[in-house]
Length: 261
Image (cartoon, rainbow, N blue to C red; front, side, top):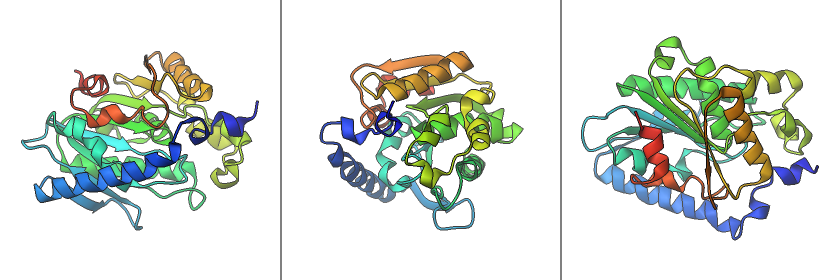
């Protein structure tokens, strides 16, 4: 199997090049709208370095709790500025939503990013009381799946739901892709950082994946659901780039599942 092709999403999505600029434009418009309304706290620092910052979007009343969305991009690209609009589904239903950036490979290792995201959640959780619900897409799905094993016990005790979307739950195949020149995953890190080799977080988990995604991503989500004995949702017809759209819609099945008691 050509693993470079197996994990290549854009090459198998019609008009794939149009998605990133569309995300960025929608996110920028959303930040402007929430800023004018006094509902956005932008650029909250959680560490040293320009990328170690998060945006916090607040509901119109006292928050029911905190949702954290962690972006993807194979730990190599993107930052929080492309995804702000995805906060609206949870925000409109009364939840504060935090979106962190993090350092990228090859400047850091994946294990470093895992620790950074845990620190970002800790900072956001200090700002917002109540239960915590985590979701992330692709590499972000990997990162939120790792949080139960790396966050402090007080924060783990606040976890109410974790929803990895199109998660990379087993990093070993990525060692055989050309991306690994920058990711630098070795056998030890692959085992330490793969959610399938670490315990589940002790709260409800839903692995979510698009039904039209690459078989490798369907396999990764299924493997996580089997090893963790957690729910699996295969979202019919959705590919890797539009599977996250439901996060922006307060009436979507995805948001209802993420926020369910």
